[in-house]
Length: 306
Image 1 (cartoon, one colour):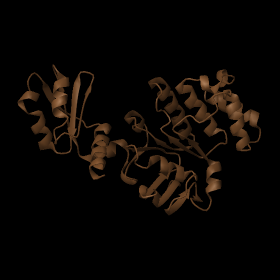
Image 2 (cartoon, helix red, strand yellow):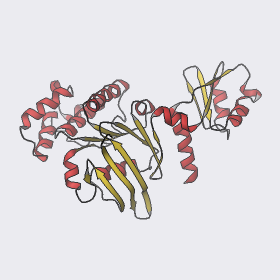
Image 3 (tube, rainbow, N blue to C red):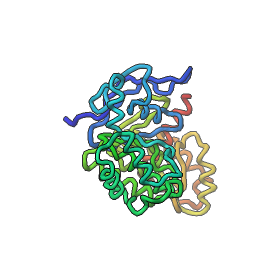
Image 4 (cartoon, helix red, strand yellow):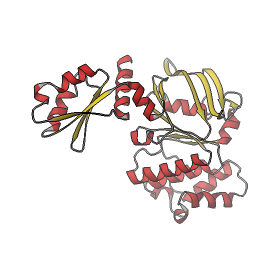
């Protein structure tokens, strides 16, 4: 059996009267890229901070990299690379100076060599003398990832690492993550982008601090037992406005020249799209449900329970 990089059970964390993590159990095998999904306030960031030893859970426990989550938190922090949502480095220092600062914090031997190697790997060598504050969003994220890798961690915890960067930078960032996972690195990454979730070997969806669903992207879509239909034709925007509020429709969106509608109740979805005003001039066909259909459905469910 593959060893577990993360093996925690019944984690609980509250801030005052607000339960943020509520009985969460989670297992992630070594060398796997695991996508962490959920709406805002679902407990993703708090869970990540517990896993890297920055927060102590109110209850529950387990291990991270084989180390007890509570008793050996300082050791866990030295073996984990944690990338926060916001760029948290010094904008008035150069890329190299920021990395030198991080290397000193971790007391890394042969710092000059370690910095040179990570600059090369991240494609940052030509920008080593550039002020960090002058970097574009994509290059800032690369620098932040370089800082996470300096101390050769065994586990990367990435909290929405590509938020706000362009599509090219996102793809390049994910190519780096995939390469590192192929070399044995374990990655837990939170994201709101469904194309990124589909690149993960496993996805986990949280709502209200609880695990709602997990598995491969294909299994999550299959197990949701949703149905989907697509339409082409004139005035798709008007049809979209009519269908979105329909109680039988969980997800409705336009992709290019196609209107995509999905739900868990086949009869209700068919009834909605067969309304005369949604048939005029439109050609409908059954389609495959998408991963984002499932997560819109899960998000609506969690909002309904809150």
